[in-house]
Amino acid sequence: MELIFLGTSSAIPTPKRNHSAIALKAFGEIMLFDCGEGTQRQMARIKLSPMKVNNIFITHLHGDHFLGLPGIIQSMAFRGKKDPLHIYGPKGMIETVEHIKNLGYYSLSFPIHVYEIEPDSMEKGMADKDELSEGKMGEIILSETDEYIIKCCPTHHSILNLSYSIEEKRSPKFIREKAIELGLKPGPNFGKLQKGIPVEVEGRIIKPEQVLGEKRKGRKIVYSGDTKPCMEMVRFAAHADVLIHESTFERAQEDKANSTCHSTTAQAARIAKNAEVRELILTHISTRYRDSDVLKEEAAQIFENVMVAEDLMHREVERHDH
Image 1 (cartoon, rainbow, N blue to C red):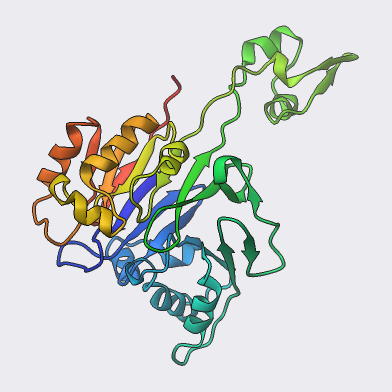
Image 2 (cartoon, rainbow, N blue to C red; image 1 turned 135 degrees about the horizontal axis):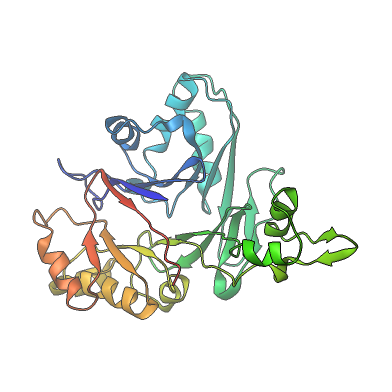
């Protein structure tokens, strides 16, 4: 799982920081979390193909988080994309995408399915998608495959903001020695047991739990979008491998952060500490900060394993088996 930060600025872009967008390369695809203005050009700079993007997750409908959608959708059409594009976001996302589809003159070569998420009621943009299901503590399950599960959780901004998590699914370790002791030979039965399917050997039923180890935790990434600090974020990010949290201001600007429903470096660090995450990455940096070291130093006083995201930064998310 590789994170690529395509845009790390707050409301106004700078020569060094583009509007918000994060690409995740994993499970044979590229997912986008937010799609600020200029996202497709940032992708072009690092040779990241938008044609591999089938899922886009928008945190909220402030322009610096979604105004890259018109360009990337039209570019996909120009290149002849055929696979469906799924766009998730808060209420208003369906209407927004309808406006985008009618913006200018071009032929749309692929279907776009839009899913609106609200804290209390959930709407679907298309009938071919299973109902979005509610998880614990306000979490909403958006997508689930054999390899991963994606959830969102409403957090606190001046408008509805959705924080997102993606968690890798990992099967328990297959203990080959135990399987052989039970009379199994390497082959298809090994694969069935790894998938949780019992097998029969010489009239005996071998159950998966007889040859599988303990459950293993998959990698978990959480992205805050724009939010002031809240307990929902702490619970949602619990034990994440990486928490990407907005840090628009330094500690001295806490009053401004509070009034605009953003977070400071110190507030983001406290979220990371209370959630017991492995690593904190700060993003959504105000244009007032040309030197991000001060932001990192402030956060590091509270949570040690922290870095400030920079545009086009790559970060591999490693597995931890202990």
